[in-house]
Length: 128
Image (cartoon, rainbow, N blue to C red; front, side, top):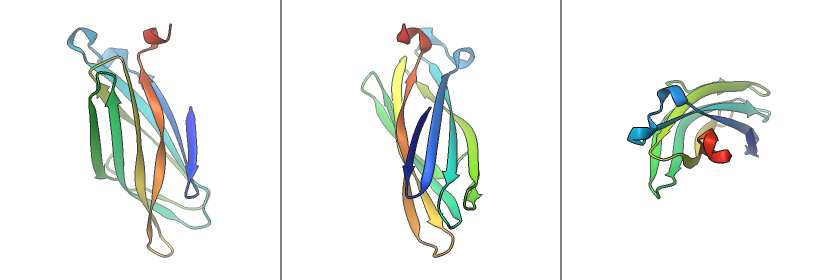
C-alpha cells in the first residue's frame, strides 16, 4: 500500500491485477485500485473533481478528468474516511498512475489540491 498526506488529507492506494477481466493475447490488461481518503483537518471537506495521469510501459500516456469519484462527491468531516474501488485498463503488463483531487474546505469554501501518490500497475508474473 502507498500513502501520502497533502493539505491534511491522507490518500492510500492499493492496486490489483484483474486476470479474469484481462485478455493478454489482445493486449488488454485490467487493474483495480482501492483508494482510502482520510481527512486529518479540523474542518469538513468535499471531493469535487479528480485528475489522473496514466502511463503505459509502451510510452503511451493519457489524462482523465471528472467530477467526484465513482459518481459521488463525498463529504468528509474531521477524522472521517471514504473508500472506493475503481479500475484502469492498460495495453501492456506494466504501468503507473498518479494524480490529484480538487477538494473544498467547507468552512471557507476555498478549493485546494490533494496529491494522489504514484502507484504501479504490474501483472504479478512480471515480479518473478
